[in-house]
Each structure stands twice: as structure tokens, then as C-alpha cells.
Image 1: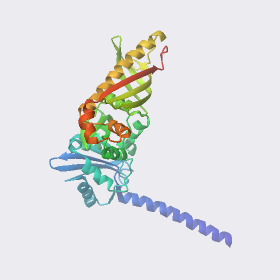
Image 2 (image 1 turned 180 degrees about the horizontal axis):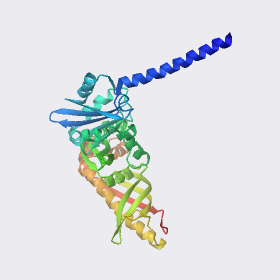
Image 3 (image 1 turned 90 degrees about the vertical axis):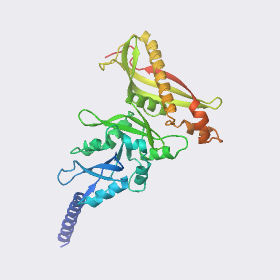
Image 4 (image 1 turned 120 degrees about the horizontal axis):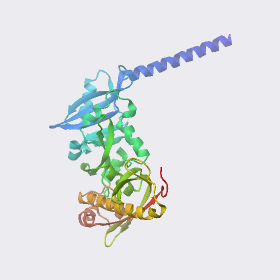
Length: 357
């Protein structure tokens, strides 16, 4: 009798688990869980394009929704009104802005985002070199792994892109001594999303977009984990330095105001065909010195480019602020930063000296 009762209990529990699983599946099928959002400017209106996994017709591959309104919040409300199923925003992990909107200012859109407690601080903010609509539309029928968030996250993990997310954007936006930045995306010839460069802002307005070479240099100056490739010339031939590791330290000088970077780089040399370059060990020193000189010139050019555009994307103001109790942003950026002198020291260590493939 006891065995029969236990058997019945096991059957009942198993049935309940099956029903619960079916219930969750039906809930997922009844709602639209937005994953990526893009915003464009169309006259006086803002156009929104979103990608969401379609679990009914497409077994989870992405589908596209579009809407427009005077501001992003109204577009989201429109999606809710026009959808036959409930729309959920708490799984959005990528928000992409067209350059037109980014140059006007993105704070209105971002402030709408941060009011939603369900959205995480690791959410990706990015700028698109094409329209955000085209970029998000390219995800139609794609799998979730192709979302901008996953592409950028993988490149951040291996050091190819400087760290960036909603939390870091807000930290830099509200900081008195640093300006925000975020990745810039584009579509390649196969209409696949790729990292196009790195967008630098003055507060919430886009000023310039660094190319991929400048993005690698920017990462070196940040002192973060960096992987990438930098071209250089040696004896009238062009080669590529593949970065294996990059480290930097920096130091302020108050009077006269100056800022110094010490950059240490480990890397391999290869030719333009992609083969590692063999070299005479006695020539390694001359080659390293040649790379150091060119790398120093490129780093100084980038620092001056950021300075000339009235931005402090590397947080130099924060460094001066930490060492000067009388520091004031208004004074520093009006009188000190525009004429600040930069000094860069570069040390390159080649890993494949005397060996080739």
C-alpha cells in the first residue's frame, strides 16, 4: 500500500514538472522579448528599430519591429500598443544610435533607459556608421549570438576593444574630469555587424570616431588589456606589429602642466602576407627603436587630436583632480588642458627576434 502511494506521488510530481515546463514555454511564446534597439533621426521624429527572438514562426531566430515617435520612450510605448503579444524590455542588451542622433546628444534616450530598473549596467551602448535601422535590420533571421552585445563583448574580452557599457558611460558622463566613449559599429560587405572604430563624446554629444588603429592606441593609453595590430615602416617596407600585451603608466606634472605616459609593448612582427618575420638578432635593437619612434609619434598625434577637439576621453582631468585639492573643472579645461604638454615614452619588446615561420 505504501509503495503504491509513493508511486502515485512520484507520477503526480513528474506530471506537475512537465506542466510547469510547458507553461514556461507558452509564456515565452506569448511575449516579445526585445534584445537590440536602434535609434535614428527622421525629420523631427525619432525612428526605432528592434530585434527580438521569434519563438513561434522562427524557433528563436531574430525578427524585426519598427516604430517612430518624438522620443525613444514613445516608440517603446508604440511597440506595446501595436503588438498582439506583451512586449518585455528587460532583456535588451544592445542600444545603437545613428551618428546623426549621437551628434545631437543621446542623454534623453539614455535617461529613459536608466529609469528602468530591470535593465542591467552591462548593457551595450554603441554608435553606427550606417543608419541604426540598417544595422538592426541585418539581424533579421539571425541567431542571438550575432547581436552587437555578443560581438563587442567577445572583442572586449580579448582586448580588441576598450571596456564600455552603460555603467561606464554614466560614470564618465557625470564625472567632472572625463568624457564618455563607446564602440562604433558598421556592416561589412556580407551585411554582418563589425566593429568600425571607437566613438568619443563631449558629454552626451559625439565629436569624433577613431579608426581601428587609433582605437588600439587609445586602449594602450588607457592601460587596459590590449590586443591589436599596428602598421609601421622599416627600410622602405611596411610591416605589422601584432600586440601580445600592452601596459602603461602615467604621471602628472603640475608646473608647468604636463602629462607623461610610459608604454611597454610585447609583440610579434609579421609581413603584410600574414607571415611572421624572421630577422637577424643583431638587427632586433634597430627594429625595436624604429617601431618605438613611430608608435610614439602616433600616440602623441592621438593625444593632440583628442585635446584639439576639446575632449578628455582618457580622464586626465581626473588624474589632476586626485592630486590637487583646489582643482576646478572650469579652470582646468579653460586654462590648463588646451595647452597641456604630453610626453610619451615607448618600450617595445619583440618576441620573435631571430626566429621566423
